[in-house]
Image 1 (tube, rainbow, N blue to C red):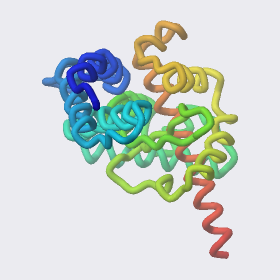
Image 2: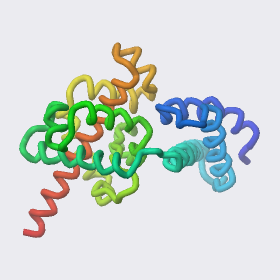
Image 3: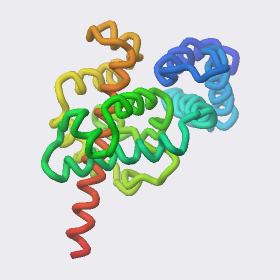
Image 4: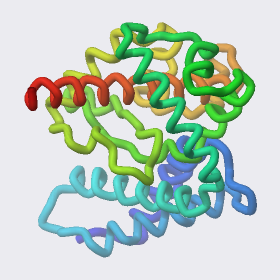
Length: 240
């Protein structure tokens, strides 16, 4: 029998930690406690729906998924990025993919901005806005580490990533990760493997929080563009 009160008490600091990690920049009109309460609602829903014939470890995994889902759904609902910005962000993603198709996995920011038809200041501003904005669709992938994740640039559009089976995604991501820079790998490792938030990572690597957020965003953009390019390439071969 699940002790509801004990679970709620034990999970409060866990939910608080999850909020600090997921909500990089607090939306206007909200504070940390608002999102903690939203996460706790996810926990209550998990308790309500839980099949008590299953193990406690299975409950923890299920509860964490529910809590994360509630927090991310709220972030989506208050996403203030304009349609204009979304269109620009899609151009950045396309620019990364085109440059990768040409054999350049690590283009400079200037090269990406030029390919996307914008100046470097606009590029940097758009990348920074991704702290919370549309980097919300998260697909868990590498099963043997239980940590590597990839995020979609546009949570409102069906991604080619959704078409992949877990093992296919795992192999493509492993290949893509080999091409990232050392600092990109460090940031992703600290964020996903060590479960640190932007502020903690910034302190460790000696960068600002906004810079760490930009590094993470660009690394994920590269991985997604790499995976999408490979999917389209394989699809083309099959249909040829």
